[in-house]
Length: 211
Image 1 (cartoon, rainbow, N blue to C red):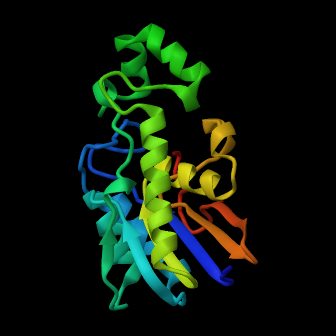
Image 2: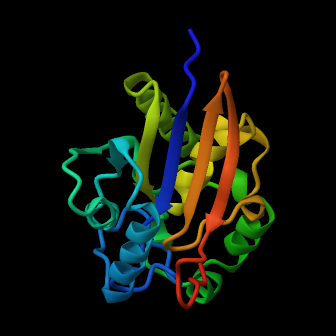
């Protein structure tokens, strides 16, 4: 049976302590900083009239804090999904691009050339990450059949989720899709077909995020 009128609204968490905009924070559990709180408050103003039937985050505090801000006074339980953790960057956790290039110049070049197939040194295998995110999305779709769903997640998780729903995850490249801090993305299922209706929406952010 196909269900209509299912909307998934993805929001990338805001800026964090330590600056997620310039550092590779995957498994590291860092909270929102003041800028990130402001970004999530701006998202709240965009989505304040939405009626959400369910809310999902990863277990990491930056997504949970973001969800609470966006929900405001709405009394909904937040479902924290282990499969929605950001990718583990391994040896690169917490580093900037410049620091990574200096630490691992050859692997940095390999990452630049083959982002979607790259396995992070001492971190997650890309194939494993994709599989667990797909499993997380499948769980959401089994739980919720219609209505509007809020998912406050990480950049890599949002990218993977949307391309999976669009049937393009096997051909995905990182440069094909942007998910800036505080950005909003919306995908609808109509007659069993997914349609991306809002991508990397950031007009609510002043100044706009750089990543």
